[in-house]
Image 1 (cartoon, rainbow, N blue to C red):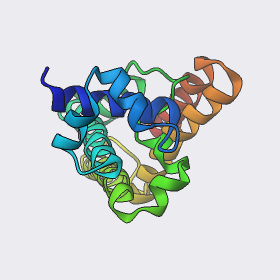
Image 2: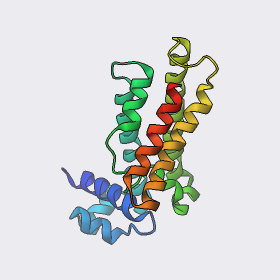
Image 3: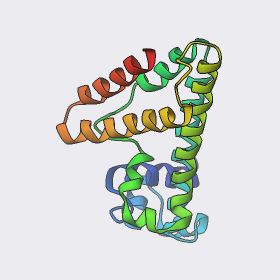
Length: 184
């Protein structure tokens, strides 16, 4: 992995662990093993590096979700794969946690990949739900957009509850319950 990649990956990890304010240039340099000159050679400053890291986390989240959504199976099976995918529920979502970071949310450039990722996710879920409604797998009265927003909230809320209780079981309960409601 080259220096630029080490900087981005280290920043992704630190943002997930500490947030924007807690991710100092010194911490990034220590984690990545890169010197100050290397950091500023590849990026204009911490905001540019943070944007690259946030964008990478967002791309990774979309890529993993899309792999779940396009696998063979029924709509409910594909959504189930997404909801039940192995995750570190106690660590939280690397993109979702950024919504609680006031510095990220206050900066339009840093906020954009977070906003776009959740818009993509709810839109993609809505497409799947509409497909399930159209093929008779799901109830004809289901509102795909509202249900997609609810499923996204279940995942993000599941992370919050898991972290608050110190138990990944709460995340599993939330996603399993959402699937049970979807199957009705």
